[in-house]
Every structure is written in structure tokens, then in C-alpha cells.
Image (cartoon, rainbow, N blue to C red; front, side, top):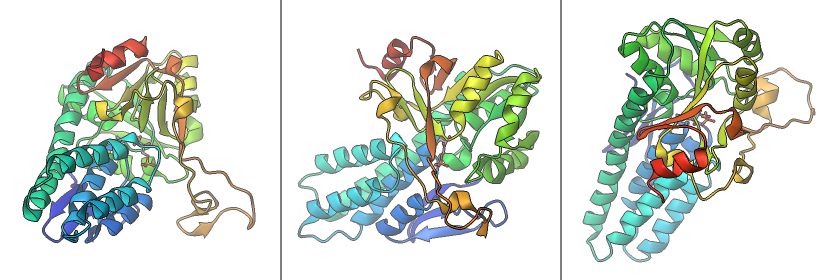
Length: 343
Ligand code: MRU
């Protein structure tokens, strides 16, 4: 399986997801600013992968921390990484975890602090893979045998430290012997479905079919789709789900056609401090992502553009949320709190 992000002596190495599938190029970020830029420009993307990359960015940044004003420098590193992408809560979850660790290291030597931060970032990567495998185990049972699974965007190995959340569920269902084939939405404008999801599935030998986003309703009505499985960037306490733009339309179409709609995400994607999805910040991305395809203009110059990268699916369209700790069902207000271990 492809290595999404790795801690090496030279820096944080990641596969450049803006160039897949045509080129398999690995880039080395040698400074925390380069890690931040890689997250912002989506060289690395997907909520859990962003979290792991940010943790590695903090560890990398602190390798060069000046002895004087170390705390200020740490705060600056964390702030720079936090300002990259606003919607995926895993970014802030990962930074908070690094901040708590740093606070606990008060009084230790520079070298001890640097090693502890790097160890923690590496641990987060390994944990994420194990979490995704657990999500897969819980979710595999929900996938109907001999039917098609529809997915959106890329919630695969590339969007995580490995294995994937939504694609992890699919991988686990296949490993369990289910006959599964996948329909992947191309996912305009950034084309994560066309460029990344079907590429991953092809590598695994899982039968995959690429469709444009606007074809999803047609196929959901056809009776061929057994369930929809998507990832998430942030899930509010009531079960509202922020995920890649277009997810909301899919969920409504799934409900209209009696197709179960599943969300696969780690507990670190829950944001139980938010009552509902209305409070989730939605990232607005550059207009050029809409007006241009691979640098080629497809719209008249000067046209007004909106480019929200995510939408919020209201909880009532969500059949279940699959986490590493089990499957949450409505009422999510209660089931999510239970899974998060909160009273
Ligand atoms: O803008 P992206 O590519 O980072 O958006 C990714 C998604 O919306 C994924 O579905 C989500 O982060 C879950 S990834 C396991």
C-alpha cells in the first residue's frame, strides 16, 4: 500500500497528491512552513492525514527551536499549521495533542523534548492505521454482499496514514470475502475521486467504476447501489457531518431511494463541542479550482465563483456513523457521546 506520510531524518516525506495518478512523486518538507504549505495546497489532504502531517510538522519545527523563547516558537509553529485548513477537526485535535505533550515536558532538555515530539507524531501515524483497520472491521458487516458501494471524494489510504476510513470499510468487506464493487464520484472540482480513489482501488484489484458527480442520483435510483460510504472532516454532537462538497446531495438522494448512507470516521473527527453542523467552519478554496481544470480555463474570464470545499449533511440523512470503537446509530446525540466516552 502507498505510504502517505512518513517521518524521516531528512524531513516529513509525503506523496504529492496533486500529481497523482499521473506521477508518483514524493516530496520532502524540511521545515514546518513547508509542511503547512503542503497541507494548504493539498499535496497532502484528507482529515486524518492532515492531522498526522501537522503533528509531524510540529515535531519538525521544534528540531530548530531556538533555546531562548522556545515556548513562543512552539506557539508560532502550532499557529502556522492551524491556519492551513479550517474544516477538518483532526488538524486541531492533533495540534492539541502535541500541545498537551509539550506542556508535560517542561523542564526537560531540548533533545528530550525533540525526541518526545517526534515519537508522538510517529505514534499518531501508527495509531491512525490501527484505527482505520478497526473502522473497517466494524463497517464491513454493514456492506451488502454482491452489491455496489458508492463513495465520494477520497477517504482512502491517501486521506489517512494508511488503509482509509470509507475505503477501509470497503477493503475490510472484500477481505471478509464479500463480492463488492465500487462506484466512485469524480468529485469536482479537485477530482479526488477520479485521481485518487479509483487509483487506490485499482492498485488493490477492487473492481471500481468512475462516474461524474451528477450521475449519482441516476445510479442510486437504479437499485444497483447497496449502500453509500463516505468519510468525514468534522461531526457535530447531533450527528451532522461535514464532508467533501457534494456529500449532502448524495445523502438526500440515498434517502429518497432507500439506500443506507454510512459515514466512516475516527473518534478524533468528532467535535462534540459543537451542537450542530451549522457551527462548522466551511473552507472556501481558490476560484481557479473551479474555473480551470489542470491549468486549462473552462469558464469565461471574470466570472464570479464560489468554491466551498465542504458541505454539511444533516444527521437525519445519516444511517450510521462507523468509528474504531463501534457503530453509532440515531439518536446520535447519545450514541456519539457514549463512543467518545463522555457522560
Ligand atoms: O479537501 P479534502 O480532499 O481534504 O477532503 C477530504 C474529504 O472530504 C474526506 O472525505 C475526509 O477528509 C475524510 S478522509 C478519511
